[in-house]
Every structure is written in structure tokens, then in C-alpha cells.
Image (cartoon, rainbow, N blue to C red; front, top):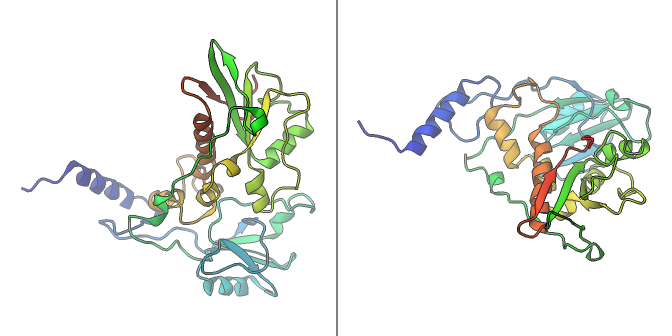
Length: 304
């Protein structure tokens, strides 16, 4: 019999395994029949993100339509919009918003009572459009912009430990930073000085783009010269596309493996889009440090 290359055999085994999983969308043409993502048209409480009226149905990522009176009408608008896969509708807020991707269910709305976002109902109207296995999104590369090592040049300082440069890094969303700031950073990595430079990667630029942040950019606590703030999405061009575009490699992964993970049957947040932020922060820090430097990453809620 004709032997197949090891790579082809492994690929066939992988597709065979994935074909046996329920609730999976395959990108390309696997050996077995393709099945669709589950729970189309099932309502979820909350909304995907803040939008503005309009949006480009050919190339955009989100938008909204005015004067839509019912959920059924909102669904109809989505079917007529090429990029629309999800809608969030609220009769109370007179809002029919559309999204090409939805990686979280939000329940809070700025300047509204707590959990006001629960007045929205979100539906996945369409399954992801399958394409060739060589998915274009998987050609994405993040471009890391290194910092300089001198604070007055806009970069972050380092600490010399045992004769070599060393830094600790952490990362957090704007909302987590604000919450920690209000309680004096108790219960976070900033609770006390670590004796080494701490670089804090924040997401203000991305949160502002999504309408989830105020105009105040996170600043280092007063008197903490050891802390340097870094705008993660500013120093990693392309990261916003990776975490928000439905054409990214992360979305391709979930289409192949299914929109679920071992400990959460139906994902409310695609954790791959959270972890890629950590990887981007590590990549930027490594690109900014000289050879031989030491780097330690801690979760924001780690207490030294």
C-alpha cells in the first residue's frame, strides 16, 4: 500500500477527531460532513459592545440601525448586512446594534443604573462563513514596537538585579485599573513596591475604541517611580484586529475546535482573545529589553 507523509497522516487524524465533536464549524473541507455552530437564534441577556448609528456592512466590524421597532426587524436588517453575524436589541433603549464578532456579553452601560445592559437581548443570526483552510486571517502578524530603555525618551526604566537588568510586567483592562485605583490598589501587584521596575500594560486605547473607557488615561500612582504605564494596543499595532476581527486566527481556531472550552460549555468570553493580550505584552517587553535581562510576568491581582 502507498504510505502517506507523516504530516498528512497527522492532519487526517486531527480532522477525524474534530469531526466527531458536536457543535463544530470546520473551515475548509474536512473528510466528514460539516456541521454548524450551535444555538443560532438563541437569545442571550446583555449586549456585545457600544456602537454608533451606521457602520459599513461590507468592511466594518459593527454599527447600529435607527428606527427598528422589534427584534424580528433587527434580525431582518442583519440578514441584509454582509458583515453582520450578531445583533443586540433593546426596545427600552431603542437600539438595534450589529456586530461581525461578539466575544463577551456586557451588562453594564456607562452613566446608567447597574446591570442596565440586561435590557438587551443578543442573538447570533448567522453562522460563520467557511472559507479555504488557508484562512486569510491566519496570515496576521503582530508588529511589536519596542520601547526605549530611558524614561525621558518615553520608554520604561529597568532595575539592575545581580548585575543584570530586570523588570516585572503585568496587564489589566481599564475597568480593572479604575476599580483597583479606587481602593488604593489593595489586592493587586501594585499594593506594595516590589524592589524592581514594574511595567503595567493597560488597554485604554482599545477600551476607548469600544466605548468602554473615559478620557482619563491610566497613570502611575503618585510617588511610585518604579511603575511605568504602557498602552498595550499602542505598542502592538494589529492587536485590536486580532481580538475584534472575525477574520483572525483566534476565530479560526474556535471555528475548527468549537465555540467551547474544557471547563465552559458555552463561552461567554473567548479566552484566547484574553491570553493573546498577555502574549503581546510579554513580546513587547522582551523586544524592549537588552539581551541577558530578566523578565517576570505577574497577574494584576497577584499580591507580593
